[in-house]
Length: 232
Length: 233
Image (cartoon, rainbow over all chains, first blue to last red; front, side):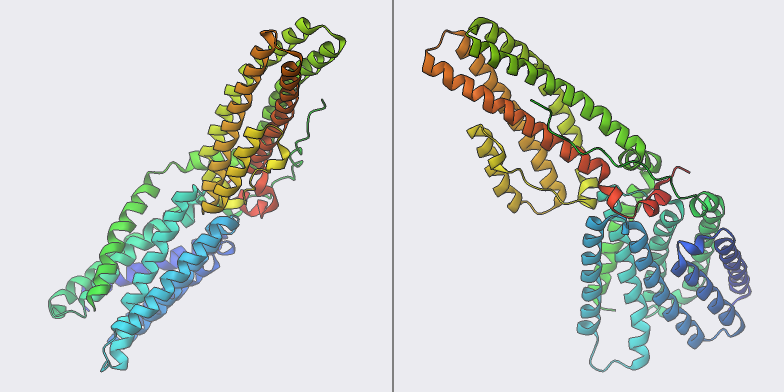
């Protein structure tokens, strides 16, 4: 790793730690526990990778991150559609189709002589691709049903999908014929994208937490009158 | 990586960017305000105001028709027809407002589809054959359309058409009665007016019920959780 990469990496670690602090301090973790876990988990792995910058550590980090991002997508589904059962049914069905399609294509397109390591490595972009589709579908359904979005879930939706697109394309290029040529660029691009994304989330989490997490429950309101036939 | 994977990525790039662009351009405050209207006591106030107005107008027309029937039984046909005309004028004024309300409700159909199922009209609740036929048609089409939002929009459309149909038949009956019809013809028209009167009530009830579903369906769900989500920042 070059010095610049190391600097960007450590700045990202500090920023992620700050984000984790804000999520806990502003009590966002009550509403988005898996997202908080994702931030904490990826931060812990970043630290491990900073101290142990090997290919194996990096692969492990990517696999765990991909799994945690799946959790974040599922949490967003629950959070955005939890109060809307009709829309939630549609969201669940589409999620299932995406997951099944991803699993089937991964199995069907895998070569017969594939090694365990190669399979492992290819799983990361596939999981990320499925994740992108999940987030895109979530965003599409939010638009279709005109569902309200709280600032932090909105920021996660707006930020995670483009970041995943960028990192998936970058990671996939690492397995192509031009891998050696693109590797340094991917090494810069992904940490930089991660830096900007964390910065965006940090700002949103800091600004919106007091209202969204500490809002008192609304006072019970009288039920709407039941329409009656007018007396003839 | 297989070509299929790269096709999926290309599709994801295009669709993701389009969707996120649309989300980014969306006015969250406006969306939240719409939901707030539906869910809070303010929404219930809106329902109360609309219901009060609709009930007052349909009640006024109904009163005129009732008095017309009484005068007819007493033998004062001219006065009865005059009262029918008064009732018709109220309906004539009421119908466009109702159609506007139904059209506005149809625009919110996606919100309803997110929260509540839509019930079709019941033909046996209507006395006018033509409106009852429309209700049958509605029942059939209801099975063919798939999404709840389409079903809601269909219901609003059928309600609108039924209001229009009932108003037209009312005008026709009043005109026939005004043209010194024979006794049997007059009786048939008075019976039809009775049927129209009943159908107006049913249509109004169905419309208000649909409005109530739109405004209060969320109350049955995790309301506090939702309010936390949509609370103005």
